[in-house]
Image 1 (cartoon, rainbow, N blue to C red):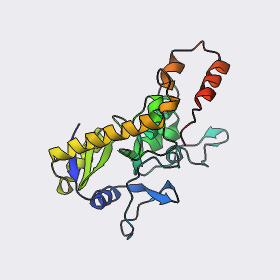
Image 2: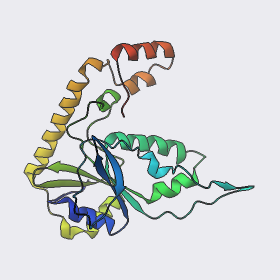
Image 3: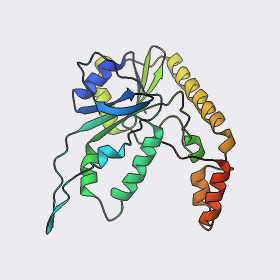
Image 4: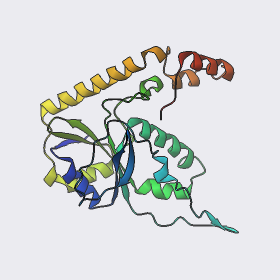
Length: 242
């Protein structure tokens, strides 16, 4: 994957916003929500350490939408390209599930397809995991390896930007003026932060740890009675992510 470096976040976000609508994390109390990016705002965008409390599904499934005009189905309205910054690995895994349901096989939801195709995903590494973070119990991790167009990792003096799709590569190609080569020490620092965050997650969830990730247990235990599994979860006091 193509990897580059930026020293400041704002020029990067301005470049994205110059091409499409951009939504960024905004701190509200102890949590993050998404808001429309305003390049003229004096308050800088925060690099969220964990996922927002607002599910990414809201960008792909509006609360209200005209789906049909009897007796014919309605055609999806034109969707403008948009980008969402600050998604985490757990967000991308949820999108992967939505894609399997609404993009694959015989049935494709035209409304979902219209938005999904115009969505530009900018994920970012987690750091300082929250009390509810338990991705390692489900086979996840604190950084994304796939499912993104661009991924950002915060290090001293800047951010490492990694392209994960052709759309991401095209963006980097168009904005070479704000990009530089990644310092070797920055890559080492990123890997160190990732390892440290993973260790924090393991320690936070040590008392809940099973013999294998929960998703693997479910996949390999199709004959396991639901009551047994529920009892096992309660005994381990496992709670679901926010």
